[in-house]
Length: 436
Ligand code: SF4
Image (cartoon, rainbow, N blue to C red; front, side):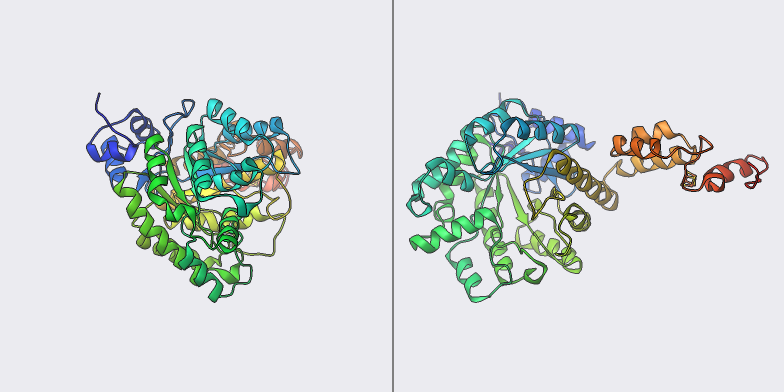
């Protein structure tokens, strides 16, 4: 058996792994094409060697756009079974990744349950967990302990770790000199920034980046380079702090690749629509083509309760412009921890954004789904339409709630049904409309 450390190392050595075979099959592309992209860092397969339940997925701008679902306990919501029900629902609805953002209770128990049973990629943010795990004031956590928590998540089988390595002293100075409307809104970023301010020390993950890479290499963990300075409002979009951090992330990307560690880059955040495509280009250039994982982007700040829509608009444009991975946003964003129904709405919105982008990107086969739906609509084949719907349950409920007089039409137009009338006239039948 040929020896390799990470999927990237295998790709560079020309070794076709089982994970690559599965992903190539899922994507409908030749394995050699995938392997080349992976050797260049342009595609990744986050897959911890200890996550045995995983069904591997690939991330990269030339692969299908994937979606992530954030879940986990908080101080106000500690029901593990409820969170596990959300995980199952997310997987059933097509989410390729779950990020466990638990910040209260026995976080290790939940994390291990996930990696023992969940076929989706699992991501975590060890920075949150450090505060819970060590159970002591932030200022007392040592550089060594920050690294240890990352190691613990690695041992637990997590596939990708989001770590805010780019908020170093240089970025922090830039942030303080360039005032923002909403400061730092990243949870992990704000914790590390506060720790740096209180201790006067460098970001432990930046300072000890090589050790962090060694952990990632050992378990084949993908490092998701967190964007502490992602804009938290439209006014802060594409500002000095965001770009300064992105430059740092680009430098860290090259260092990771030297050790064959797979990398993705996290991105905005909140951003005006007209800045999104340019941001994707800047990221691709500064971060050397590493897959981009965007959190939204949310394109207006005034729609609490509807942020699954504001983010789907931004996510579709971001992915069509090259983002590989969309983090879902639920209607509960900025308001509360999402319920099961919120999670569902967020997933559907993200899947719509991802699929729309895949059509625009020309991903092989993406448009076939739409063509089949259009044919079913032309045929007024309602069962087929439900089968093909991204949310068949909702589609069926809507139709059932408003019965048409004529079964083949719907209550939108009734006798004026253009589809039915065109089918009939082109088949040589009479179309009266009035007395039908
Ligand atoms: S009634 Fe109108 S909306 Fe309904 S299927 Fe016919 S054309 Fe479409």
